[in-house]
Amino acid sequence: MTDFIRKITPNAKDDVLAGVTVSLAMIPEVVAFAFVAQISPIVALFGAFIIGIVSALFGGRPGLISGAAGAVAVIFVHMIQEGHAKGLLFDTPVENMGYFYLLAAVVLMGVIQILSGIFKLGKFVRLIPHPVMLGFVNGLAIVIFMAQLGMFKENTKDVFGQNMRKTVSKELVYNVNDNAVTDLISGSKLFSINGESITNASTGEEVFIMSDNQVFDVKTKKVVFNVQDNGFYSVKDNGVVKSTMEGNKLYVMIGLVLLTMLIIWGLPKLTKKMPAALTAILIVTLISIFGGLQSINVGDFIRDGGGAGLNGFDELSSKLNLGELWSHLPFNLDTLKFIAPYAFLAASVGLIETLMTMNLVDELTDSRGDGNRECVAQGAGNMLSGILGGTGGCGMIGQTVININAGGRGRLSGVMMAITLLTFILFADKYIEQVPIAALVGVMFMMVIETFAWSSLRIMKKIPVSDAVVLVIVSVVTVFFDLAIAVFVGVIISALSFAWENAKKIRARKRFSQDGNIKTYEIWGPLFFGSITAFNEKFDVKNDPDEVYIDFVESRVSDHSALEAITNIVNKYEAEGKSIKLKHLSEDCKILMYKANPKFKEVIIEDVHDPRYHLAANPEEFPKPLSEYKF
Image (cartoon, rainbow, N blue to C red; front, side):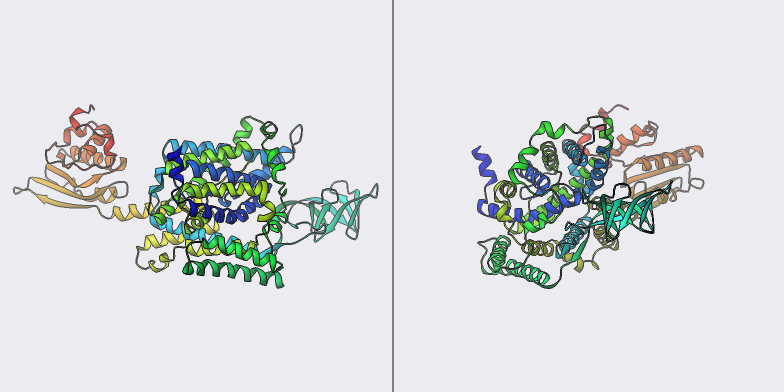
């Protein structure tokens, strides 16, 4: 136990202060996750605590910060909405059923991530080229920057004083003629319109209120119809309507953001004994409180988000009643079919963002993490979070960069971040709520400046065109689509570019014996699916002499396409009644070729001068000499 504590506390002071700083920067993004997914902020904050502390204690990368990330939130939005609708169709209708489907999906997401770590899939992050990494960092920096611009907007209020919803019209439900709402088929009058009030035609009771081309149910105060083209239409909810801040509120916001950035930039030039980000947050908070500035703080942001709100320990306690929590979910094949696609996509996105963030930390700290261990820790954190009523998450590049810049290097920084979040949930919410959003936005802006790979702009003309194209494409796709899609696109383009370039490197030097009766083709370059067309064009089967040798001393037989191409060449020469021999193949290549076609034993020449390098396979798979293999 003493050794464990010694390992996680080599840099205790900096780790503790960095963890507190990160927890404050974590709050807006985690709460925004809750609003996007239409769940209570307590769910997202509690999930961030569980994922954060599990990955900090058991993950493969000390200093990496994990929590309820927006990249995962977007994936679950549609599932939660559909889940709500499915719950209302049960024999015993269940409200907010999407939340219970979310918990199941998060648990399944964790299982998939654990399996990925057990089967060592984390090592495949090595296949991600550096241009893809730069594009990922730049794209994510732009995404985080654009997300902060949303903090300069405020929610528009509807007729009830609550957040106005942006609704899109779907199917026509009722006709409207001369202030009368009529049935589509019978044409009978159902409701009467008196200004903004809509009353039941039979009872005269007010049932709806009309405002801004929307119809509200007077009991639930929710939008039920859109008014368009003399008719009532069913609606699809597209989120809260926002408008840009104006007047003093905007000027105060900008001023506090700039002050925060100035402190973070200038303080390290005076002293490095205090973390600049945390100091800036404290100073700006005190100025806001004692200066009586009208700035939006964390509490205003949470309360105005349209979620269920924060009820501190009471709500957390109710979430930990596991029997009640999981009693609403139907455990059957339909549930698995419904959540599986979302869980798989969330697991993939979560692991990609986590592993690429881990790579970034490796570069920033000049150390190396364990990707497979991180996969298992992330999966365990998500599983535990889902079981206990929290939401899913992954490694967060923005908060991780803040942690590293603040001096956080060990596991203690991640643990401290999680404990501070939990403290906020249980006890300190009244104090944390007074922190101005402007201070946190300033911290995020400075993080964006630190994260963006500015060097990529200088090297664009110095690197290969294909790498520059990959860098730009990955950045753009990350901004407009999705992180996982961007990485896959970048890797595919890089792989195809590599294959194309290497396909052009196949060469064949031809020489004859002194009597002209033997022709030798000396093959240079890798032989794989991309180069087999050029390889086939090197041979002149009909005009070659009766005895031909193909020398592979400077070539590599890499895949099945190469094996098939060699087989076809051998068959063509033999069909012409000519002798063909293959020589200078490494043992790895000969093993692959013998397995593919025993006929190669007749045409491959065994020689003491055969190359010893390993091709087309892992050398650990062939520890024995060729003579010990049976074919």
